[in-house]
Image (tube, rainbow, N blue to C red):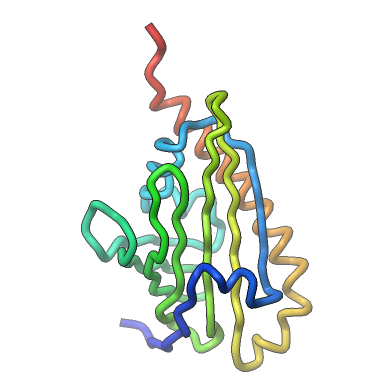
Length: 173
């Protein structure tokens, strides 16, 4: 096992408590169920989320609040996550319990899905974090880059999810 540094777990209100919040939004031509199928697919994250190299669900299905997983990222960082919101087809959010590098203090990702009723959904991705050590002093520089990177990744999420939906949709009789 790699090094383990505890993080401070946060709730959904953390989005209002830090200035380091990054938001991306896409209209995705897929059903809420298909979007959640992509969220639950460990491999899918490695395709659309550039830093992610491996996802391992460490809790059995069905997933829900309290589910855990380990995400291995570029640079040798592992994030140990716990889901704090899980509403299939609507919302999921997780916080870091710990990570393998001592640079992250608080971390939250919150995904919200709104069915638009026309075969597509609005998907919002909120990421919030507070770093520690030397990283804390670099956030003012990295904030603009993270905004761009997250928007770019979420465009890849849309394309991946729409391709998945096209492959798995049943033709209407």
